[in-house]
Length: 282
Length: 294
Image (cartoon, rainbow over all chains, first blue to last red; front, top):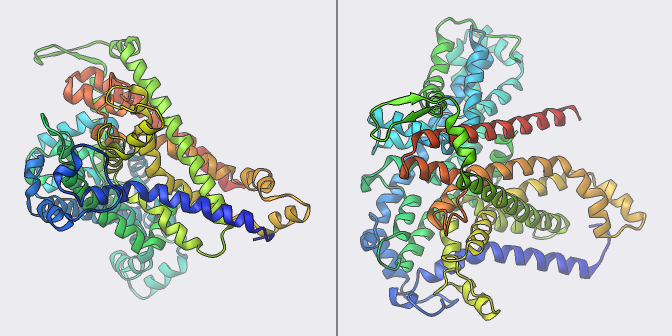
């Protein structure tokens, strides 16, 4: 701080607290709503203080009481989301790091072509090519399977760029020393590159886990079998029940449960998260 | 293209290493995209038995369709709203957090976590708060004399999705603005303070101009976000309605293709969206090239 102006400092803190409150308000209300019985949310305005049905609502959400609300048990959907998020994060990192290794440390015909083909994926988000991608997955018989949920999403230009960028900063002497000691390419990759990339991998993992967990359109398309529903799309199923009022207390309990894993990852691994966010945008 | 001075020799190994990435890219990215390109110049007959080549008829039809032009306009309004609201709020919060000495990390933690909330979930949360019968905010607005109903009023629905989309994006913008501000040398700000410039004047004459690379970068990122990553918010809440008031382009591709089963029209829309992504990516990369030279 440059000058001492108590009023300005006070205004600063007030504004920041207002910001924090605005950010947290929807979550607080969702939590409050998830602690009331169904009748409490049919008419009148929602109270601002939690009710006494916390255990009942979360218990029934987790164990399948949401079937009335139009979706499979939350625990199953969370397991599906977890499988999908982990498969996407691990898959993306694995295929990106080996292709970046090939592009940086080898010279082979079509190297530049391969690089540009990978680069193209940056320009083709799922949203703009949904119908044909769906047809491909349907023709491969991958609808309603974990492979169908994860594999089409694991190609990633950003992760490949990140690793390429990082490998280029590793001094050449490292490779020369390894070669003198008789290490082949795979040995060098496994014993030197991988340990050096540890922080980058972790940062990328945080970002990709959130990306995978929050997928919405893709699971909506490729799953018709309830046992493969992910939690984020399951909430939508509960909101759009035909012919009746949505069961808001269960929906909000589910929404809270759906938020816990990714929010926990961001808060617990804040430093890695920020690093990952900044690096993937370079 | 840049690569190492010292490299490995290998004939088969490098191909094996890039193979998984290339297979996934070709099967799930390049092939579908070329299919979209191909279908966009075909017209399928109503029974799905055959199709004929129609040049650019699908595109002409699209641009003659008031529904599509309206969707374009809706998308522009939506993106401008989301970008302005989320960047404005983030800039204000970052400027404040940059001034704070004690508790800065705490504020940061409390402001960044909405990034982790899925767009669809964010949409449902705000949908619930604005619910005309039980929503707290709708009730408060009624108290102020405004009869909120996003089921009937297109404007209300648009405001709702803009707020939900911005709420989620503020944390991202906040992080980048704050990092940008902390990179500005303190000596510049101190010098201005000695010359008698107050906090507000310093912000507009020194901090804000020096932030312009960050601002420009975020502008592109936010437009991309509003265009392509907000499908979940629309689908989980307004479903494009009421009366097409929130039918943004990504949602229209989906509803025309999957619900309306208009293959040629949907493919033509996909192609236009791809062109938009490519244009935005080029803008972003050109800007990054420039930054490298500084």
